[in-house]
Structure formats: structure tokens, C-alpha cells
Length: 128
Image 1 (cartoon, one colour):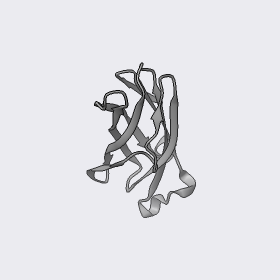
Image 2 (image 1 turned 90 degrees about the vertical axis):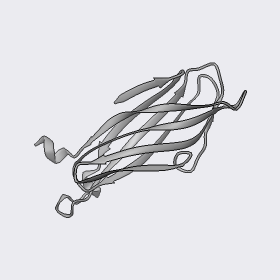
Image 3 (image 1 turned 120 degrees about the horizontal axis):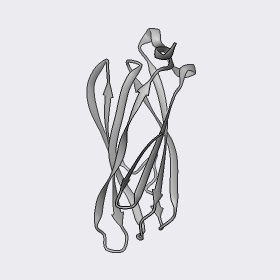
């Protein structure tokens, strides 16, 4: 698990290699990641956007951006948390991701960029 904290917003990421959905001989590796976002600040925030940098040992890195996370733009009061699971497909069994969330403070409309810590995706085939 990797963790980062930005202005009281804690982001934890756990990664799992999905061997049953992967086909190494076809250069297809599937990973899921669970993200937990905890609002440990004194303000209410809404997650508006996400931005990911995805690095795959077999190809160029890419940027993925979009609104919310898994179709939601959650609002969290102080002390609340939000968890979701998403996934990433790689052509190699070795990669990493990092990113950020744009979150808006509902009190005054100011936005902050919350860091999503870099996490590694390593297929279990490399641990034999």
C-alpha cells in the first residue's frame, strides 16, 4: 500500500495483479487498484477530475484524464472517506501509475490538486 497526504486529504492505493484475467503469452496483463480517499481536513470537498500518468515497460507512457472516479464525483465531509476499485491493462507485466485529483472546497469554490502516490504494477510471474 502507498499513501500520500495533500492538505489533509489522504490517498491510499492497494494494487492486485489479476492473473486469471491476464494472458502473458498475448502481452496482456490486468491489474486492479483500490483507492481510499480520506478527508482529514476541516473542509468539505468534492472530487471533480482525475489525471493519471501510466507507465508500461513495453510502450510509451500515457496520460488519462476525466471527470470524477468510476462515474462519480463524490462529496466528502470532514472525517468521511470514499473507496473505489478500478483497473489498468498493460502490455508488459511491469509498470507504474501516479496522478492527481482536482478537488473543490465547497465553502469557497477553491480547487486543490491532491496527489495520488506512485504505485507499481508487477505481475506475479516475475516473483517465481
